[in-house]
Image 1 (cartoon, rainbow, N blue to C red):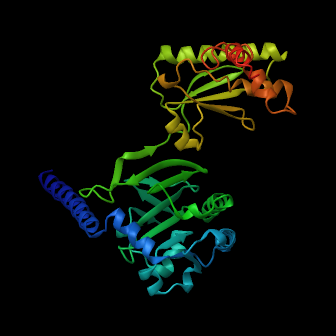
Image 2 (image 1 turned 90 degrees about the vertical axis):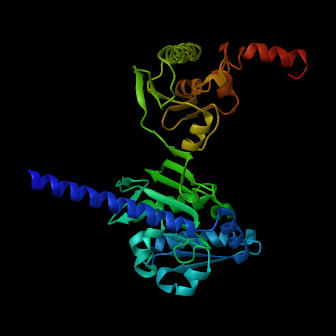
Image 3 (image 1 turned 180 degrees about the vertical axis):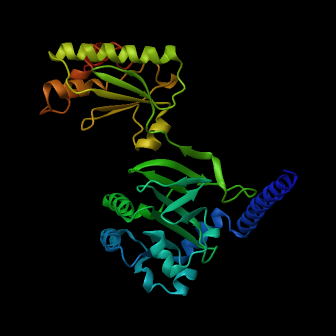
Length: 367
């Protein structure tokens, strides 16, 4: 037992030493990195960007080729060049801002990236980031505008993930409507799972902690949520709102009452259950769903997404009632009819109800 204790002590000491050495090495790496401002200035001076795709991924290569053709007229003085990884030479990597897109192993087979110089690491078909393993086949990471392992004075953006299929789907989606801003990312890193952004954040620009994760600008999103009420017609799901039971009950009772009223007005009973997702703020809702409205609905999935907090007290928009109207009356020929019917009789719409605002318009002869 005594010998075992000594061996355990030595092993733990070795592990701690290894961890300390790794942290020390990372600190030294960060010290060699330029500031974010300097990296941006160097990028602007280059006036050239190289996009690298793996040889085997024809889908991504073709998608990027079509995208570059589409934005040709908006390029200004910047030159965008697309190459397969086997076509890239050392001077390309060392002297050009880079975008690397595709399976990491495929690209790395030619470029030989030193993963110690990146904030994420691939282990087989999975990657690690922020001391967490991301193992789902749909997991994708986009690291934007980071000091390049080939030349720290120039930026690199990497879009990669655990499966080629997931990367292809992401690239097709992001380039479908994007223009030149595809190459101007506001976030330092993003991780997607099943096409939903689950991690989002920025690297620190503070001189003492630069290029480390800035925990003040780091979010991990809960898309599953907690079911807090479920009946035949509606299910309420809380996404970490922090509301008290009394506050949540108040919201639920108002929504249930108003949906029942809309059913009565439309002369029927809904057959498809509605899911009502509740978020703590429009900021979090926007970051998760790319929609910062207080409330919006999805007619295909019969879901409501609402930000509920003190900021919107007495500002009930009655948006979710549109799902009831659509189920019972069908899609309108005149779009304005649907939200109009949805807010009928809702005395909390706009704080006071539609009749109050209609009277204002009428009195001002603006009807």
